[in-house]
Length: 239
Image 1 (tube, rainbow, N blue to C red):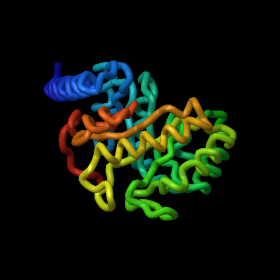
Image 2 (spheres, helix red, strand yellow; image 1 turned 180 degrees about the horizontal axis):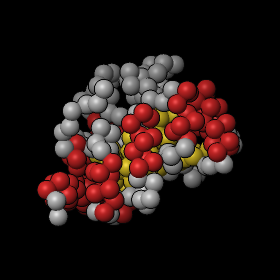
Image 3 (cartoon, rainbow, N blue to C red; image 1 turned 120 degrees about the vertical axis):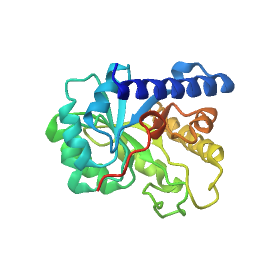
Image 4 (cartoon, one colour; image 1 turned 45 degrees about the vertical axis):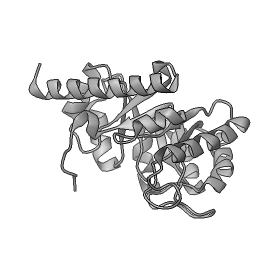
């Protein structure tokens, strides 16, 4: 085993222990929570190591990095998640490899994704990114639709050809009423998920929690956690 594979395997085991302990503390079965490893800024070689260690879900946030990496790893049994803010001029490229887009936050993006998914003959899973630092009609600092806009946007996705409404995603906000209150933020996301599922029962995915706050996300009820540095280590940002 190479040094890098040893390092990743050890880190992955620690993260798995954390998720398992968080599930136990919350009285949840371990299999209710899926680990997504965020591979942004890390090379395709690391993605291959992760796949060999049993990871099946990986995430990227910049198309210019993700597209060539996904192509280099096309032979691996992976589900690719796009988690960054998505500009409409990148939609065609992202639809080429992303199985799930977790950053749906505006109607224009839904229209663009639908058009490209149909053109490519694909069904793309969609999560609405909820901005818990946004005002009633604003977007958040890191993108996202305000809580007040969630139900309308969910309806647009659900009715769009080539798209599948899978659920909701959030990032713990740095400002506003939920700043420093990760578990409360994630509980608010769960409340919104309950509202969405009344109209769209299969939209039961809740993506929340990262390296620093995955325990709070699991406690609140998240179904997916997105972990990067705790698995792959700290790496200089690209670009």
